[in-house]
Length: 149
Image (cartoon, rainbow, N blue to C red; front, side):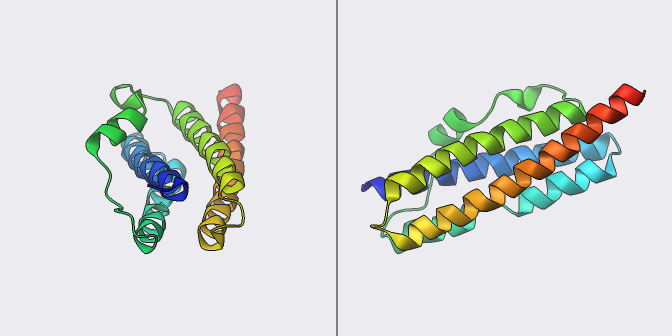
């Protein structure tokens, strides 16, 4: 498997686990009756880039399937924990910034040899950066609200 396919497979697993985390947080926020967080998490669960990454893998002749071992290895361990809204936002922010670092490294390693994959990953990095900024604003708002209590 060439390096770009390996990068894309890694990104695919990251996106799938991220979508699952957003969905899990959506249901928790809904249970807590927090409409703003509920909407935020649902929006990002649906904004997953897994489909676009899988399509690019197939275009390059790879198999876009992922094995369950990869999903388990990459998934986070928070699922059994009850998290506060601030903790859910912090977990998502940490995951987004980790993905940004990882995907930015992929962009550098892809170089100019595969412009379509490079553009895809650059676009995903840009969107993830915007999402991280939004999560940081939400986190600040949650901290201000907690301080006011």
